[in-house]
Length: 307
Image (spheres, rainbow, N blue to C red):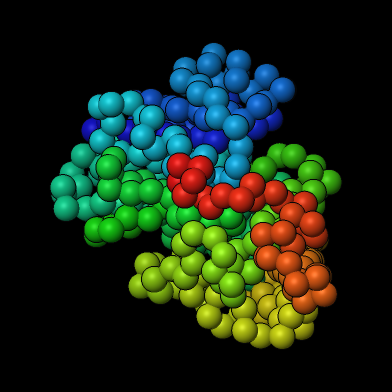
């Protein structure tokens, strides 16, 4: 069994050594693809035994699809891991023990994912754990061609492992809000594309594709058709009241308010702003994305970037 773990980085000195340590018991290679770190991430990754490549940033999908054909020639499996994630010891042991026995017909492995926010685990709200595809057999998978909420995809059968990855970002709340402000603009690109189909990207996932596929289907076929703004409030009430998110305490309340309401409301208002600009100016959606959201698509689709 040979496993190449791919980690995308930019200024992840706080996390990178921890992420690499969590996979060392089963990874035959750690490939770090960096997009311009200035905080010592590259040196820390190399000192921890990783092979580091450099590629300018477009988005997660483009970067991951650039990395996949560049893993070690002898890799049988490719695992995607975010720099702020940790493969829990039980999952590392499960990968080590079970992966050699997976039949050749299987293209991918789903694992659980949980999250900590401001140092506290999120247990309520119906958000976690979620089963996601994180290991793909080399040559049989890719990353979805999207600007946001991208997942690995395979054509053939998958199996599910029992244990989990933990998302445990140690950066401050100011960083989190700035990141999600940027994410909200990227999500608007995908929502506009769902309406106008002006980019050559993947849109609706197959609802049969596990939890991630079902959530994508609900998001794009149900949630997206509800009234903007009020749907964010309704979703927050569902998570915080119906699914008992308030039991997550002070930090959990911050997470459910910020991620379950503020972020979703911000997406809706940016989407409204961009639609209004298109109606007022008659411009192409890609021009509105540039002028309103500050995202320059460069006249290209993701496919033109090698995704």
